[in-house]
Length: 279
Image (tube, rainbow, N blue to C red; front, side):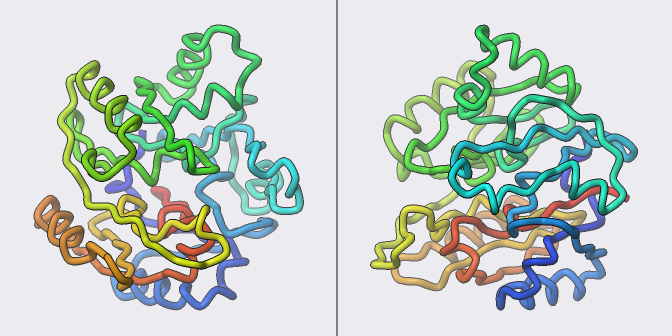
């Protein structure tokens, strides 16, 4: 599996160019000489979800992209086959329905939330679904609980691998108790260590609060030796606390803070709008 540290190129939807936050993202990446590309024929900006998983330099595994939360908004549902064909990517295609935002990877492991089961009910035995995903990605599959109020049910706003036996994740004391209790069982089952990342709940009258990603620091972009880390600069924020933690964890990496709240209020952050690969 290609890890984020091994990547050197970041792709975005061409649609993102019109968003004011993209100028900030582009500036940071160009400053550190990261290659940038743009994807044609996309229908929304959340490229992480409908682009393939790179397992080695020459192999990309593409899962079916038919999330239930877009069932009534098919005009926003990009077709991965069309996007990859238009942009010259060759794929190994799977009929398993799985968003890229629900795949957090390490060299030989992936973390998914249990949303994968409800979106693949054709598998009567859950173990068979897990085994097939593991075979496609050549990795051990670890299932964690989803956040029930998150319409996407994705893992990439909850946890990240720090090393083979350690994950960084939303603070267990600050998340929903049902999620924290279930996560503790997963941690024990797999013999993992857990590092708590601050998280905060921003109180707002914004009409789409239910999909807002404000307060989630886990959805950062790691590409090569660079981490592009979200901050929010809003009331109740834990920006400094979160930045200090990520800086202490990665003393040899370059870490850039970035406020892209215009995107966050739409339901995602920097990892959601980017697709980083090794070329």
